[in-house]
Length: 568
Ligand code: ADP
Image (cartoon, rainbow, N blue to C red; front, side, top):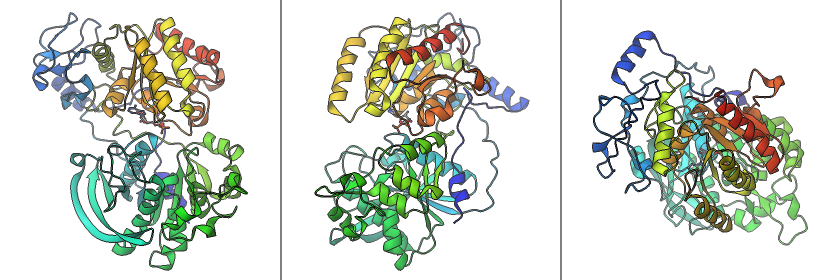
């Protein structure tokens, strides 16, 4: 099977601190004439929002000693008391880089790839899965491949974020003895073609991507079959069906054991595992609801969860089934590949299928994550014009009521608050950053009630001062601003298949402090490690104790204060 091109589109990781946006002399002159916001002197900071763009904001016009005329009228800094939170502001895009993207070489063996996924950024994103699917689709498109994404039409998707939305097919797909009327829509999201699958039952209804009041496992079983059924009905036969995570793990079984004997012959199946912690536990009779005979898969060679053998009932794992039945299996970093071959209950099936198992490092979507053009930033910046970064930091400090000082290191941590992410190390850093005279902002959310409650208590304790903010919510806009404001981005995970926060942080000029595990070990190299001098880009620790974290964080602070990496 021609695997190379299917996976060749995975993005390369970003190892430099800021995007290098080289442009020719003529273009540069034009850009500067139009966008006279960048001042190199500390005493000249431009004020980023036009008052008339958001009249509800209090006009404070702190001028910081800068010249009065910036060429774009009255300007406003946010305050914590603003009626509309500052991250909801719309910023003029006039500072955006006008640079055309660099010419990307086209692949020679062009294919049609359909990604089938539970998440897609930015319209249905919960974590890195959504980011990676969008970034990977864009990378493959730019190399000349034909790419579509198939996504459940979640009720929570904001339709105004979809261009050219149109109903393309109405058909029936099977679930639990019935044929469910289903709509397929076509639309474009962030320049990527998407096919939305909308069943007429209760599946995918609710305020969020996950956690609706329907059976999630059965909904994704339905979705997996509905995607193949759509291909069957329309005659669309891509070269590659690229499925992601446990949610789509039953599709390879359905493909080989059902749809191959119908009309689908051409596609080959690639499964990407973004996080092996979620393995899609499924009872035989649940699998049978998608029309397969669940009992056929209850063997060690197929889909049984080995740990449940001899239990009553024994359970299946959709992820394991997906591994066995896919033509190729990819995970998201070389180190995570090694880790998963050595530990965890899925190691034995991965070893059995070692020849088709690849570890390919994720990258970030450099269109969505670009500080030179990012619509969420009050000031844009890039490697040749880094001054906008300090405006972003000042803006965030003002908006959150932190002490506004450029010389104080600002640590940012943006994460799902789950055990994997090193919760005790995150809470420790809140304390440690303060002890070291720095600031810390945590943006996170937990699906676990007691974890959320613990962090609410911490927020009540710390948010009154001027050095810490714990923000318990999900906000795409605020996350962009925080990466832009950060001096240090913290990722202290206990395990991390790849991790995107450290790469996004680097793209936005923040230095990562990370634990050496999974993809963090593949993307961050310690500044003080002489064997890695060429690649050095952050601070790395190994232990899971607070002392180990201190060792890395303290060094990061020392480097910052010694102006080794700060931008002022
Ligand atoms: P995971 O997929 O395990 O959550 P990753 O580091 O691979 O971790 O990706 C996390 C993505 O989700 C990043 O884009 C990060 O910025 C984003 N993210 C996590 N928590 C939040 C939040 N509370 N608000 C906004 N974005 C978040």
